[in-house]
Amino acid sequence: YHWGDFGSLRIQDPLQGAQMGYGQFKKALGANLAGITVDLRQGQTDNARRQFEGFRARFAALGESCRGCHEKESRYFVDREMQETVEELGKVFQGPAVAADAAGLVQKIGRESCSKCHRVHVPAALAGSRR
Image (tube, rainbow, N blue to C red; front, top):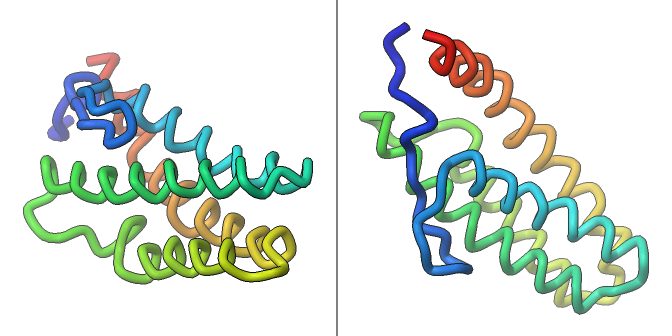
């Protein structure tokens, strides 16, 4: 095992303005992303927009956190394409058909960023915590 200790990672949360553990930060990020979908299903567009703003800020902070372990700029999970997808989701909130247009983008972020990152990093984090 040659990766660092995920349990020791700390990220500055842009919403709370405080350092928090990596696991706690990822849960907050996931709650924002899920909150977008839940709020839109309930017709609460303003709440969904606030969830999106929180997600966007935390997603940017997540991208910065990758530099703590990776020597090169991360090309996956938080790359330019994913950043553009997040910005595209932000533009959806300015249009009339928010719920219909947002669903596909939220799914893309979950499938292309969250899920793939978890497949690489979660097993390593679990292995590292058992050494």
